[in-house]
Length: 285
Figure 1 (cartoon, one colour):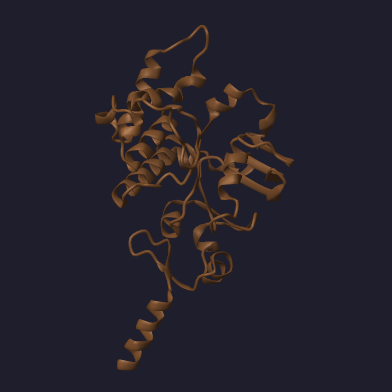
Figure 2: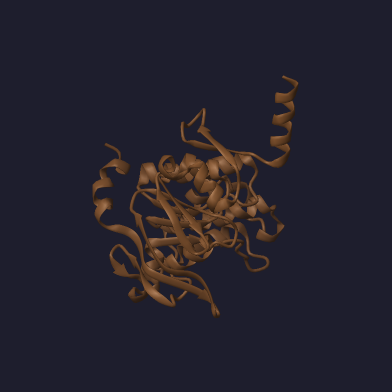
């Protein structure tokens, strides 16, 4: 039995992350209101929804980067607000949306920052720190850019460097806000495959925001569909990825069919041009 299966019974009872009646706001604008959500350990959970619905805000709230207006976030059953900062950082890694590195910082310097939670006055840089940095660089195929300044890289290379920093932190839970941003299709699949391997082989809990619904369905154990600051539905991709949901949450007409490779739900959008072409073909026929 692999680690993914071995932990499943435990994860059913104790959520890795849990939001209870969570409300989050920017200034006086409420983004999420009294939201309840349980993220189970040893699973990949993907947040989906239209732009501005609150996906990134929810991720920031779960990571304790935002103070709730109401409610609580719990990490392994304990109120995250009451845990020491380093204790949280050892258990929870986050890749925010469009992070910015200080000018002149090299790739290795950035990735090494992921080891900060594991250091103190009595234990500075260690062999394990070096090993975790090298492993993260290798996993993200960034070794050849080790000494390059971050600001000299392409958008996709920068994104992989930030992912490497998150991996070097070596936490059992990863929160990633659009980890495939700026990446070409080949690197998108490589990164998503890597996250899936970390989940299956090492039991990492993964929570991420994805815009590509077909990729979300292929890689997620659980989908959470968000609409206007509320959870519209959550469950397995097969259970919730329906034509009705996509029409109501995203405002698009589509057809759902089985992915010919993975067997997961695949969304085929029906735009105006597609509809016109289809009708024209039928007329000709």
